[in-house]
Image 1 (tube, rainbow over the protein chains, first blue to last red):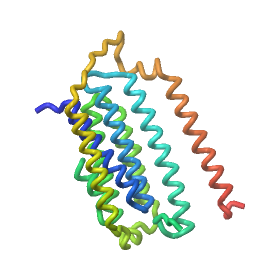
Image 2: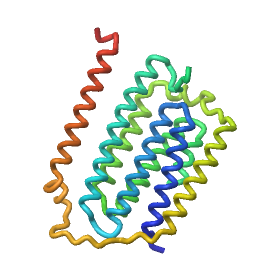
Image 3: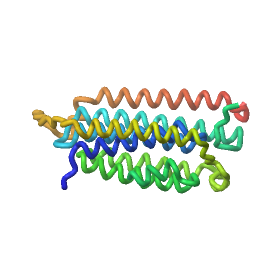
Image 4: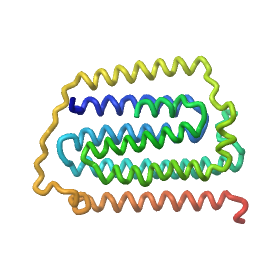
Amino acid sequence: MQAGINHYIFLSAILLGFGIYTVIAFKNIIRILFGITMIFTASIINIAAFSGFKNFNPEGQIFIYTLGGMCLLILFIGIILAYNYYKETNSTELNND
Amino acid sequence: MVISAFYISFGKNIISSTLNMLILLLSASGIYVMLNSELFALINILLFSGIIVVLLIFFPNIGDISSGDEMPMPKSHYLSILVIGILSSLLTSLVSSTRWPVIDINYEFNTFMLIFIKYLPVIILMAVLGSVMISSLSVLLNRNNPTNK
């Protein structure tokens, strides 16, 4: 069976659900970063499925690179902030106090 | 991929979640190869997986963090799992039942170099934006760090 475009969209929707749950439900900073990465991966798979399923599409590729760059920036900033938070509080759990 | 995503969310400690994140990123790059975007698959393997490894190495007491009881599961979480699951299944059933048109795009020269010829300003803009954000953040962090004074 050849994978159709619906399979990729299904996969990205599942990843999006897990990512949103991870961002909402947990207090650990590293796990929240993983959730954000999962959400970005889901959106990139979606765009790649629509742009490059049949043939090569440069517009879709430029969207993919833009999203990947944004995801890398957000991960970089998140890692720096998480490291600073860990140095201040000696913990990676977010407090609601 | 779905199993590793499940273990990222519901894994017992951070180390297993991190290794599952690595597996997820590698399998995602395999999907990118299947979808005609090989360069982004390479970037995904090199940069994203590298960031995960750096995250593992540079968090100093990650073993101590993971040994703690860091994931209590209150009952409200089960409700949120249920709501997100119902919404995801609705979305996926809606999307899967739709017949998406696959359009044949006929460009004059439909090559990979078109990205760097036609869309070079977008790439330069992204690079400039990223460098400004990173430099401003590093300046802010150095200003707030009392050890640098």
